[in-house]
Amino acid sequence: MTQDSSPAAETRTSDPSTRPASDPAPPPHVKPGMSKRKKAKISRGIQYAILLIALALVVIAADWGRLAETFLNVDVALDMFPEVITVALKNTLLFTLLGFVLGLALAIVLALMRLSSVGPYRWISAIYIEFFRGLPALVVFLVMGFGLPVAFPGMGLSKLVVIMIALGLVSSAYMAETIRAGIQAVPKGQVEAARSLGMSSSRAMITIVLPQAFRIILPPLTNELILLTKDSSLAYILGSAVGGRELAALARAEIVNSASLTPFIVIALCYLVITIPLSYLSRVLERKFGDVGTKS
Amino acid sequence: MSTPTGDTPHPPVACETDPAAEAPATGAHAAGTHAAGSPTTQASPAEAPARHRVDRTGEPIVRITKLAKSFGDNEVLTDINGAVHRGEVVCIIGPSGSGKSTLLRCINLLEVPTSGEIIVDGQSMTDPDIDIDAARTRIGMVFQSFNLFSHLSVRENLTVPQRKVLKRSKAEADRVAEHNLERVGLSDKIDASPASLSGGQQQRAAIARALSMDPDVMLFDEPTSALDPELVGDVLNVMRSLADEGMTMIVVTHEMAFARDVADRVVFMADGIVVEEGPAAQVIGDPQQERTREFLHRVLHPTG
Ligand SMILES: Nc1ncnc2c1ncn2[C@@H]1O[C@H](COP(=O)(O)OP(=O)(O)OP(=O)(O)O)[C@@H](O)[C@H]1O
Ligand SMILES: [Mg+2]
View 1 (cartoon, each protein chain N blue to C red):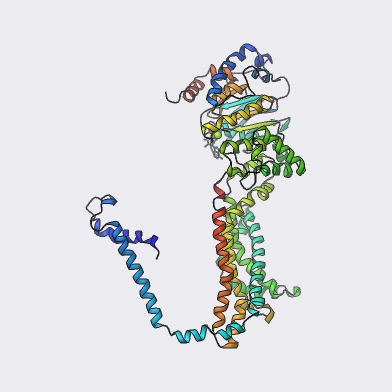
View 2: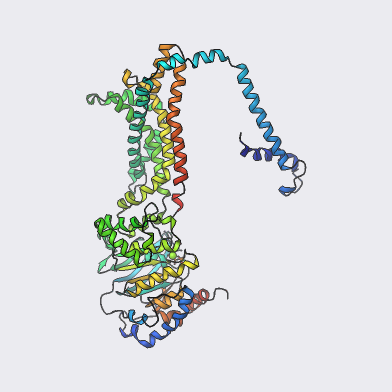
């Protein structure tokens, strides 16, 4: 718990004792008993104590020797280089990016369909979005991974294409809702001004609304990219040749080879190398563009 | 715009230019400039009458016939008729909710009329087969809330519509943009972003944006209502000089001094109908209808 939450905790504990039901509520600044500041101090002290006890329990209970041996085996870790970077990290980035591009393209179309004046477009888009938002990414991967090659046997769909489609489908439903919200957050006056200048509604959408909508939704889209980076690990269930392994697939293979869990730590760090800068970027974008929608 | 009280569709030209009719308007000017802020250089009282020479014999540039507009069960406009001629400045006044904005928005079809006809420059806006986008380029519109495109610079606000809609070259669009920003006194802000401008500067940029499309008629919907009082004068001065240059203007406004000073005709609306209309000096200086008198009294003497 952080310091911010302590006033709330303080209010909750103090209320029953200081406010008997029959008495009129006293003004907040003259509560009887302990002062507000003193209670906040005690509450904070309790929170620190809980934290310390939890830490102590972990330190005492864990078998540090075995942990280090299983998870921090330096030889096993070094053995994974350079493939973990040149093949696995590269593939994770590639899958994520391809999935994101396809997902974004689908999402824009879905969002526009969702806002269309043509009823059937709205319904199709709504059903699609509900369907894919309701399915675990794992299920989508399994159905696509084994279903697509059966459905289109003549096309010789590569693993890469199947993964791209699966990730695209998973992300498009979420992004479509984000984009729709972004479009609706653009002030109506912007479209009216564009139309009054003679722009058609599609021209106004492309030139005026979408650029503003994307500024508004850049932070949530960056978050979607983070989620997709993690979802790309599901590609391992489709199995792949050595050159097609991404981080999760490589880790599984290495674990079998080395009989150590160290590869998990290595790929965990690799994922963080991707996702932490992204979430930092998301916060920067939020600060920069977060207030765009409110300006005229 | 003809009223229930009656107005000939084509009054004699002399009616608008008669020096006697002009006299009260000129007298009102002093009070007008006082209320609006700094006196303008373009519209001195001596010059003002020259602009008022409006030719009302030809085909009007805007003609409204039996216009009605409802939102669901709420009838907002009822049987509006009227005409605006080239070079004319018409101010629409009236209480909040009387349908002034709706009337203006019907003229360029931002609102689709329920019935009636609107003809702009010989073309029926209400004809379902009209190329509405092409027709709108000839009607400039200025909004209460400016509505500059917030993701574009001032220059792009002016050039993007020219390039995308009128298909002008980059060089020509830039030239037109620079010319129109100069007209509104914002040459130094050409590369600024709208958010960095004051309200008055944003509104003047919005006027320049509309002018860049070379419209035949300009619609203003309470262009100064969202501005701090000290910024109102700059915008009104720009509009005044536009009027002096002969631009056809339909202005919804609560600035009575501006209406009295600049408008050729003033239309008073209430509850979706035109209650009274006529020369500015008459409608504001000597209103014939009780509702007009009541409204003007409230606007001009808000404290009692
Ligand atoms: N899009 C809309 N949907 C439903 N009702 C509307 C809509 N636009 C306007 N109205 C209604 O129409 C009536 C007239 O509105 P309008 O904005 O034209 O008045 P106004 O004379 O411009 O008033 P104000 O001086 O406050 O701007 C109001 O009662 C308003 O509630
Ligand atoms: Mg209005």
